[in-house]
Image 1 (tube, rainbow, N blue to C red):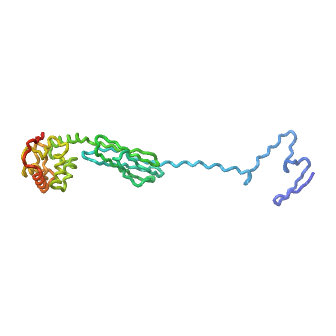
Image 2: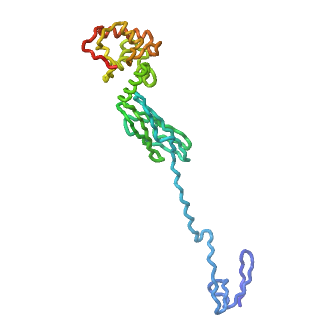
Length: 294
Protein backbone atom coordinates (compact mmCIF):
# COMPACT_ATOMS: atom_id res chain seq x y z
CA UNK A 1 0.00 0.00 0.00
CA UNK A 2 1.29 3.43 -0.94
CA UNK A 3 0.39 6.61 0.77
CA UNK A 4 0.54 9.86 -1.21
CA UNK A 5 -0.22 13.45 -0.43
CA UNK A 6 -2.00 15.61 -3.05
CA UNK A 7 -2.30 19.33 -2.62
CA UNK A 8 -5.24 20.99 -4.40
CA UNK A 9 -6.02 24.68 -3.94
CA UNK A 10 -4.18 24.80 -0.61
CA UNK A 11 -5.81 21.65 0.79
CA UNK A 12 -3.98 18.51 1.55
CA UNK A 13 -5.54 15.26 0.52
CA UNK A 14 -4.22 12.01 1.78
CA UNK A 15 -4.52 9.27 -0.73
CA UNK A 16 -4.15 5.65 0.05
CA UNK A 17 -3.11 3.76 -2.99
CA UNK A 18 -3.13 0.03 -2.95
CA UNK A 19 -1.83 -2.12 -5.68
CA UNK A 20 -4.52 -3.06 -8.20
CA UNK A 21 -6.84 -0.31 -7.09
CA UNK A 22 -5.49 2.36 -9.46
CA UNK A 23 -5.58 1.69 -13.14
CA UNK A 24 -3.80 3.49 -15.90
CA UNK A 25 -7.17 4.91 -17.05
CA UNK A 26 -7.09 7.61 -14.36
CA UNK A 27 -6.22 8.48 -10.86
CA UNK A 28 -9.74 8.27 -9.59
CA UNK A 29 -10.79 5.13 -11.47
CA UNK A 30 -12.33 2.63 -9.20
CA UNK A 31 -11.95 -1.08 -9.69
CA UNK A 32 -15.28 -2.83 -10.00
CA UNK A 33 -15.90 -6.38 -9.04
CA UNK A 34 -15.51 -9.01 -11.74
CA UNK A 35 -18.71 -9.84 -13.64
CA UNK A 36 -20.38 -6.52 -12.81
CA UNK A 37 -21.23 -4.11 -15.67
CA UNK A 38 -18.66 -1.56 -16.56
CA UNK A 39 -19.49 1.94 -15.33
CA UNK A 40 -20.59 4.50 -17.86
CA UNK A 41 -18.38 7.52 -18.14
CA UNK A 42 -20.30 10.86 -18.04
CA UNK A 43 -20.20 13.00 -21.20
CA UNK A 44 -17.38 15.49 -21.26
CA UNK A 45 -18.15 18.94 -19.97
CA UNK A 46 -17.81 21.59 -22.67
CA UNK A 47 -16.14 24.64 -21.36
CA UNK A 48 -15.52 28.06 -22.78
CA UNK A 49 -12.95 27.95 -25.51
CA UNK A 50 -13.15 24.17 -25.83
CA UNK A 51 -15.46 22.41 -28.36
CA UNK A 52 -17.78 25.51 -28.49
CA UNK A 53 -20.75 24.75 -30.81
CA UNK A 54 -21.44 27.22 -33.67
CA UNK A 55 -24.01 29.94 -32.93
CA UNK A 56 -27.55 29.30 -34.21
CA UNK A 57 -28.38 30.78 -37.63
CA UNK A 58 -30.08 34.21 -37.57
CA UNK A 59 -33.83 34.25 -37.83
CA UNK A 60 -35.03 34.90 -41.40
CA UNK A 61 -35.90 38.56 -42.09
CA UNK A 62 -39.49 38.97 -43.14
CA UNK A 63 -39.83 41.06 -46.33
CA UNK A 64 -41.43 44.46 -45.82
CA UNK A 65 -45.13 44.53 -46.62
CA UNK A 66 -45.76 46.28 -49.94
CA UNK A 67 -47.53 49.63 -49.92
CA UNK A 68 -51.22 49.83 -50.79
CA UNK A 69 -53.05 52.62 -52.61
CA UNK A 70 -56.79 52.84 -52.04
CA UNK A 71 -58.78 54.70 -54.72
CA UNK A 72 -61.97 56.64 -54.13
CA UNK A 73 -63.13 55.38 -57.55
CA UNK A 74 -61.30 53.84 -60.48
CA UNK A 75 -64.06 54.55 -63.03
CA UNK A 76 -65.38 58.05 -63.68
CA UNK A 77 -68.30 58.85 -66.01
CA UNK A 78 -69.43 62.15 -67.47
CA UNK A 79 -72.30 63.24 -69.75
CA UNK A 80 -70.97 66.03 -71.94
CA UNK A 81 -73.15 68.95 -72.93
CA UNK A 82 -73.67 70.12 -76.48
CA UNK A 83 -70.71 72.16 -77.66
CA UNK A 84 -68.47 71.08 -74.78
CA UNK A 85 -64.97 70.48 -76.14
CA UNK A 86 -62.96 69.82 -72.97
CA UNK A 87 -64.06 67.82 -69.92
CA UNK A 88 -62.20 66.99 -66.73
CA UNK A 89 -62.34 64.66 -63.75
CA UNK A 90 -60.23 63.85 -60.65
CA UNK A 91 -59.17 60.51 -59.15
CA UNK A 92 -58.45 60.58 -55.39
CA UNK A 93 -56.02 58.14 -53.74
CA UNK A 94 -54.87 57.29 -50.19
CA UNK A 95 -51.89 55.27 -48.98
CA UNK A 96 -53.59 52.91 -46.49
CA UNK A 97 -50.44 50.87 -45.72
CA UNK A 98 -47.57 51.37 -43.23
CA UNK A 99 -45.05 51.68 -46.08
CA UNK A 100 -44.45 54.54 -48.53
CA UNK A 101 -45.68 54.08 -52.10
CA UNK A 102 -43.71 55.54 -55.00
CA UNK A 103 -45.65 56.39 -58.16
CA UNK A 104 -43.21 56.09 -61.06
CA UNK A 105 -45.39 57.01 -64.03
CA UNK A 106 -48.93 57.74 -65.21
CA UNK A 107 -49.72 56.96 -68.86
CA UNK A 108 -52.96 57.75 -70.73
CA UNK A 109 -54.24 55.62 -73.61
CA UNK A 110 -54.60 58.52 -76.06
CA UNK A 111 -53.07 61.90 -76.78
CA UNK A 112 -56.49 63.55 -76.38
CA UNK A 113 -56.37 62.63 -72.67
CA UNK A 114 -53.82 64.21 -70.33
CA UNK A 115 -53.04 63.84 -66.62
CA UNK A 116 -52.07 66.60 -64.16
CA UNK A 117 -49.43 65.30 -61.73
CA UNK A 118 -46.71 66.39 -59.31
CA UNK A 119 -43.09 65.74 -60.40
CA UNK A 120 -42.24 62.06 -60.89
CA UNK A 121 -41.35 59.91 -59.03
CA UNK A 122 -44.08 60.84 -56.60
CA UNK A 123 -43.81 59.40 -53.06
CA UNK A 124 -47.03 58.98 -51.10
CA UNK A 125 -46.25 58.50 -47.41
CA UNK A 126 -48.38 56.23 -45.17
CA UNK A 127 -51.73 57.86 -44.49
CA UNK A 128 -51.21 60.60 -47.08
CA UNK A 129 -53.76 61.52 -49.76
CA UNK A 130 -53.26 62.57 -53.36
CA UNK A 131 -55.15 63.26 -56.56
CA UNK A 132 -54.68 62.80 -60.29
CA UNK A 133 -56.52 65.24 -62.54
CA UNK A 134 -57.46 64.09 -66.05
CA UNK A 135 -58.65 66.17 -69.04
CA UNK A 136 -60.18 64.82 -72.26
CA UNK A 137 -60.48 66.74 -75.54
CA UNK A 138 -63.83 65.92 -77.20
CA UNK A 139 -63.17 67.57 -80.57
CA UNK A 140 -64.49 65.36 -83.36
CA UNK A 141 -65.94 62.76 -80.99
CA UNK A 142 -69.51 61.50 -80.58
CA UNK A 143 -71.18 58.69 -78.69
CA UNK A 144 -69.50 57.02 -75.71
CA UNK A 145 -65.73 57.46 -75.48
CA UNK A 146 -63.63 55.44 -73.00
CA UNK A 147 -60.02 56.29 -72.19
CA UNK A 148 -57.72 54.57 -69.68
CA UNK A 149 -55.07 55.94 -67.34
CA UNK A 150 -52.41 53.46 -66.12
CA UNK A 151 -50.66 54.24 -62.82
CA UNK A 152 -47.36 52.40 -62.26
CA UNK A 153 -46.13 52.36 -58.66
CA UNK A 154 -44.40 50.22 -56.06
CA UNK A 155 -47.91 49.05 -55.13
CA UNK A 156 -48.31 47.58 -58.65
CA UNK A 157 -50.11 48.75 -61.77
CA UNK A 158 -53.55 50.34 -61.50
CA UNK A 159 -55.78 51.06 -64.50
CA UNK A 160 -58.26 53.93 -64.17
CA UNK A 161 -61.07 54.59 -66.65
CA UNK A 162 -62.70 57.80 -67.88
CA UNK A 163 -65.99 57.29 -69.73
CA UNK A 164 -67.63 60.27 -71.46
CA UNK A 165 -70.94 60.28 -73.31
CA UNK A 166 -71.03 62.90 -76.07
CA UNK A 167 -74.36 63.90 -77.68
CA UNK A 168 -74.68 63.51 -81.44
CA UNK A 169 -74.64 67.05 -82.88
CA UNK A 170 -77.48 66.32 -85.30
CA UNK A 171 -79.70 64.79 -82.63
CA UNK A 172 -78.88 67.62 -80.26
CA UNK A 173 -79.65 70.17 -82.94
CA UNK A 174 -82.98 68.55 -83.75
CA UNK A 175 -83.92 68.52 -80.07
CA UNK A 176 -82.97 72.19 -79.74
CA UNK A 177 -85.03 73.11 -82.77
CA UNK A 178 -88.08 71.39 -81.31
CA UNK A 179 -87.50 73.22 -78.06
CA UNK A 180 -87.15 76.55 -79.86
CA UNK A 181 -90.33 75.89 -81.84
CA UNK A 182 -92.20 75.64 -78.55
CA UNK A 183 -90.35 78.57 -76.95
CA UNK A 184 -88.32 80.93 -79.16
CA UNK A 185 -86.48 82.32 -76.13
CA UNK A 186 -85.22 78.85 -75.20
CA UNK A 187 -82.09 79.58 -77.24
CA UNK A 188 -80.99 81.93 -74.45
CA UNK A 189 -81.44 79.36 -71.68
CA UNK A 190 -79.69 76.31 -70.33
CA UNK A 191 -76.94 74.72 -72.41
CA UNK A 192 -77.74 77.01 -75.38
CA UNK A 193 -76.24 79.99 -73.55
CA UNK A 194 -72.69 78.89 -74.39
CA UNK A 195 -73.39 79.23 -78.13
CA UNK A 196 -75.98 82.02 -78.39
CA UNK A 197 -75.29 84.36 -75.46
CA UNK A 198 -71.77 84.15 -74.08
CA UNK A 199 -69.91 84.66 -77.41
CA UNK A 200 -71.65 88.02 -77.97
CA UNK A 201 -70.93 89.58 -74.60
CA UNK A 202 -69.28 92.99 -75.02
CA UNK A 203 -69.27 92.83 -78.83
CA UNK A 204 -70.83 95.14 -81.45
CA UNK A 205 -71.37 95.40 -85.18
CA UNK A 206 -69.70 92.84 -87.44
CA UNK A 207 -67.99 91.13 -84.50
CA UNK A 208 -71.35 90.71 -82.74
CA UNK A 209 -73.02 89.44 -85.91
CA UNK A 210 -70.34 86.76 -86.44
CA UNK A 211 -70.46 85.69 -82.81
CA UNK A 212 -74.24 85.49 -82.36
CA UNK A 213 -76.18 85.78 -85.62
CA UNK A 214 -73.77 83.88 -87.84
CA UNK A 215 -74.01 80.77 -85.62
CA UNK A 216 -77.39 80.08 -87.23
CA UNK A 217 -77.63 82.20 -90.38
CA UNK A 218 -74.09 81.53 -91.67
CA UNK A 219 -73.82 77.89 -90.57
CA UNK A 220 -72.51 75.39 -93.11
CA UNK A 221 -75.40 73.06 -92.33
CA UNK A 222 -77.99 75.78 -91.82
CA UNK A 223 -81.39 74.43 -90.80
CA UNK A 224 -84.07 74.66 -93.48
CA UNK A 225 -86.25 76.93 -91.32
CA UNK A 226 -83.40 79.43 -90.81
CA UNK A 227 -83.22 82.02 -93.65
CA UNK A 228 -80.09 83.07 -95.51
CA UNK A 229 -80.05 86.79 -94.73
CA UNK A 230 -78.13 87.60 -97.89
CA UNK A 231 -80.79 85.99 -100.09
CA UNK A 232 -84.13 87.06 -98.69
CA UNK A 233 -87.22 87.02 -100.98
CA UNK A 234 -88.43 90.38 -99.64
CA UNK A 235 -86.98 93.91 -99.34
CA UNK A 236 -85.23 95.02 -96.17
CA UNK A 237 -84.62 98.32 -94.34
CA UNK A 238 -83.36 99.66 -91.05
CA UNK A 239 -86.82 99.33 -89.57
CA UNK A 240 -87.04 95.73 -90.85
CA UNK A 241 -83.77 94.71 -89.20
CA UNK A 242 -84.59 96.53 -85.98
CA UNK A 243 -88.00 94.83 -85.70
CA UNK A 244 -86.51 91.38 -86.34
CA UNK A 245 -83.63 91.79 -83.89
CA UNK A 246 -85.67 93.47 -81.14
CA UNK A 247 -88.80 91.32 -81.09
CA UNK A 248 -87.95 88.29 -83.22
CA UNK A 249 -90.45 86.75 -85.59
CA UNK A 250 -93.55 85.03 -84.20
CA UNK A 251 -94.24 81.60 -85.69
CA UNK A 252 -90.55 80.99 -86.43
CA UNK A 253 -87.38 80.11 -84.52
CA UNK A 254 -86.24 83.75 -84.47
CA UNK A 255 -86.16 84.91 -80.83
CA UNK A 256 -86.37 88.43 -79.43
CA UNK A 257 -82.83 89.66 -78.72
CA UNK A 258 -83.86 92.77 -76.77
CA UNK A 259 -83.11 92.48 -73.05
CA UNK A 260 -86.55 93.84 -72.19
CA UNK A 261 -88.08 90.83 -73.99
CA UNK A 262 -85.81 88.19 -72.47
CA UNK A 263 -82.91 88.52 -74.91
CA UNK A 264 -79.19 89.18 -74.24
CA UNK A 265 -78.59 92.42 -76.23
CA UNK A 266 -78.56 96.01 -75.07
CA UNK A 267 -80.04 98.84 -77.19
CA UNK A 268 -76.52 99.89 -78.12
CA UNK A 269 -75.72 96.40 -79.40
CA UNK A 270 -78.97 96.24 -81.36
CA UNK A 271 -78.18 99.60 -82.99
CA UNK A 272 -74.75 98.30 -84.03
CA UNK A 273 -76.30 95.20 -85.63
CA UNK A 274 -78.89 97.26 -87.52
CA UNK A 275 -76.13 99.45 -88.91
CA UNK A 276 -74.01 96.44 -89.93
CA UNK A 277 -76.87 94.62 -91.69
CA UNK A 278 -78.05 97.75 -93.49
CA UNK A 279 -74.58 98.38 -94.87
CA UNK A 280 -73.69 94.80 -95.87
CA UNK A 281 -76.99 93.31 -97.16
CA UNK A 282 -78.87 94.65 -100.17
CA UNK A 283 -82.32 96.05 -99.48
CA UNK A 284 -83.62 94.53 -102.71
CA UNK A 285 -85.25 91.09 -102.66
CA UNK A 286 -83.54 88.16 -104.38
CA UNK A 287 -85.63 86.58 -107.13
CA UNK A 288 -84.02 83.17 -106.66
CA UNK A 289 -84.25 83.21 -102.88
CA UNK A 290 -85.52 80.09 -101.13
CA UNK A 291 -88.35 80.72 -98.69
CA UNK A 292 -87.49 78.91 -95.44
CA UNK A 293 -89.89 76.25 -94.21
CA UNK A 294 -91.62 76.85 -90.90
